[in-house]
Length: 546
Image (cartoon, rainbow, N blue to C red; front, side, top):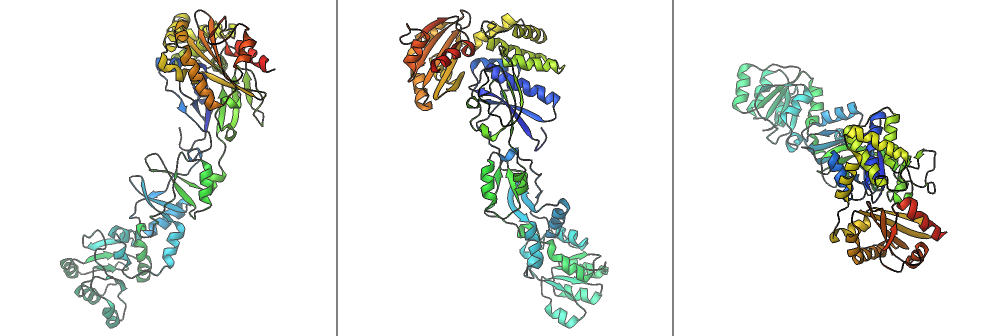
C-alpha cells in the first residue's frame, strides 16, 4: 500500500460466518486486480471454528477487526514529516522550510519527537536581541558556522563553541576595538597581521577571517599553540557578522514542552477540537511506537473524506458496523432480502437469489476474465459449501452447484470429500464453547417496533446440543439482558440429518413457540428439514409480527 493512499474497506456482517469473511477477502482480491484504489477486507467480530479452519487450510490471514469506521488520522492524506536533527542551524532551517513550502519542522532523534520549530519562531530569531555570548549558550557546532559562512578551517579541531565569549568585529580603530575584545571572544577580523596577533595575544577562542584573508604560517602556529580556532570565509565583514548568529542550532529555539501530537488511531473529531485551541499550522503524527510518521494541518482536515465501504453478504445497517453513518457506502454484494435503503445516492447494488454471496463474487471473477488462484478457488468453494450446507439448504441453486464444480477443479478438490472435512472441523463444540456460539453466527432484525435475533449453530450430532440445553438457554438469556431485545431464537442444525433443534427465549417466547407449532412447550424443539435461517425460519418470524 502506498503511503497515505485512500483505502476502501470491504466488510461482511457482524457475527461473521464463513461466507461473510470469504466474500470480503475474495472481493477485495478481485477489486485490487481490476481497480486503482486500495481495497482492504474487514471483519466485524470473532471468527468461528469453521472459518478459522478454512483460512488456515488455504493460507489466508484473517481480516483486520474493525469496531468503528469513524474517520481517523490514519485515513487522512498526510504530508511526509519534515524531520530534522537538533543541531541544524537556524539558517538551514529557514532555507529548508522555504524550499519545501512548509511551516513547521519536527526535531527528532531515531524517529522520536523532541521538539517543534515553526517558521514564525525562526523569523522571530532575526529580530530578537540576543546576548553576545549566544554561540556558546546555544552550544553551536563549528560545522554550523562553516555551513552558514560557507567557510573552511584554518586552525583548530574543536567541534563546538566551547568557551564563553562575545561575538566581536575587529574594526579599523585598533585602540577602541582592542579595548572591547576580551578573552574567549569570537572575533571577525580581516587580513591585517597585527590585528590577528593582537586577538591571539588576548586569547580569543575563535578568529573568523573575512574575504578569504590570509594568515601567515607563524601566526597560524601561534593560534594553534593557544588552542584558538581559526576559520576563513569569502564573505564580507558585514555579511559575516549578519549571518554568524544564524549558525545557532534550532534546539535553542524549538518548543520542547506541551507538544501537541496526534496518533494514527485518533478520530477526526478530536483533531477539530485541538486545532481550535493551538497555534501551530502543522502537527506531527505518531505511530504506535511514538515515532513521527506524518504531518497534518487544517488543510488536511478540510480535505478529509468519509471512508469508503463496500458491504458484502448483508445490506441492513443494524447488521453492519455500528457507526456506519460515518462511511460512504459504495457498493453492496448480497444474496439476502433487501431491507429499507440506507443509501442517499445511487450505488452499485448486486443482489442475487443464490445460496451464498461467495457464488456472486466467484461469478464476478470470471466475468472479469480472471481465474482465481488455486488457494482463492478453495476459499470460495468453502464459503459456498458452508452457506448452502453442501446444497442441503433450500437456498441452494443450480448456479451454486455449477460454481462449486468449477472451483473444485481449479482448487484440485473433490467438493463432497472436502465438505465433510470442513464440517467435521467446524462443528466440534463443548460446554465451554456455548457462550461464544450464542454470540457467533447471529443476525439481528428490526421488525416494526420489535427487535429479534436469530442464531445458528451447526453440528453433526444433535445429541451433544440436547445434553447442553440448559447451558444454551442460560447463555441466551444472559445475552438478552444486555441487548434488551424481544426475542432470541437459536437453530442447532444437523447438517447430515437435515434437521434442526430450536430454542427460544425472550418476552415473545411463548407467542413464537405457539406460532411455529402448538405442541412446542419448552426447551429444544425438533424441526425436520429445517436448515435455512433466511429462507425457512425468518419468514415464520416475520409472519408472527405481521
